[in-house]
Image 1 (cartoon, rainbow, N blue to C red):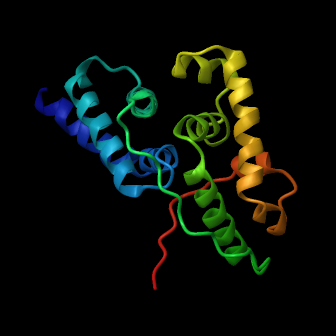
Image 2: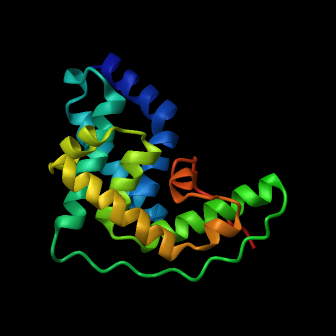
Length: 185
């Protein structure tokens, strides 16, 4: 890669890494360390082909999705660990309510399978149509629909607190922005 390409790559990483990390965190079930590894590997792959990439963000996102799919297809992958139960929602002010919603949603997403989480992230966080999700995951549109339906049902069962937080529908909650939340003692 020449000097101009290196500079463009550095600028891309500086400008877009936080948005890409949010997606990676959601894809990895809230595990920030796994998300950082996922993003770093995607950026390494993109750097190797940087001169030939027309749309860098789309290319890196595609790598993120495919790497996540590869992770959940591997048989030797460790089982996901359940996280502690999220606190009950208080229904308080807007900031507290939004934070409660993020905590509950991230906890529930972490308890979904990697495939279910990936489908929900692509459909609701990335707002992709079913056909695009099917193409990215290498499956049929019907599989995406049924996986979405089962994932939302499981999310409702895992996070009944969403109703307490004033959300009538889990799909509404899934479409909100769930940026990583830093919890400090």
